[in-house]
Length: 370
Image (cartoon, helix red, strand yellow):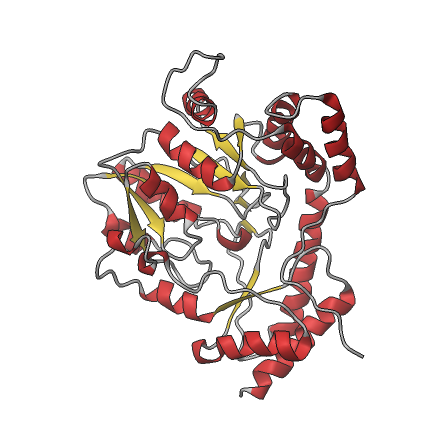
């Protein structure tokens, strides 16, 4: 009997979300309105200890507007990892500033302290680390560098809803933090983003920039964008907020099951979790031999109907869009990670049988290549 395909990710949208959308549609208030305001406050209370939070139409918009709101622009440099989604570097470039790519350390895919230090110049305005895959970046190391050199920290928390570092929630560490609400994130609003702001000044600037430069209608104070979140999206997000903690617990349980099944395989390195870190497993990312990675991925899908993903196969500093910012740059740990990582399903929709199938499939496939 043919097995059902296990997808690498699966958005969860239920009757409650559908009812919330219908409620907004009946209200006649479709664009940014009371649902957005309520979602902002509820998200802030849930994830970032009540820190002022501003809703926008995507995570990338949040990152871009957050940087502009924090004063980043032409002539500035912001240090970013190359091993991440392109939106990290893109958002810096879109401000007119220069993304400066640094290497990662091998265990948690966090910006490596030595590489960050080597990338600092008199033009460096800040550091934008990524809480990749749901694991917080190594906060102590990056904060020490920022303090020593008088630099700001901007958090890319797109994948890290509910993660924390030594009791500090992700999103409360930098001058601002961006959370993505894309469909496959740990929670979604259908599409959207949230910007957690350390100051009222940054929060007001993000609000202006998302709404054509206006706080009051037709009183445009700055040149802005249309990056508003709709009440439809906010209504979905508000429902998802009531479910995300349970989903996170399931992701962590699923990760523990995968750890137990895969950790004895010499050919597989399971995800590591730093002391003091709470990992929310947006992705469950293993490392395998670079020469075997693509074979393993194909075999999982074709022979076992198990999906997987490679996040990310081309480092940002080698993308055609961003390579001009990094001529001749050598980032060995970034290159190694890009050739070895493979993300397995860990989402809350997995059954115990699914998890058993994933473990059995990975074991069979890696052993077949041994």
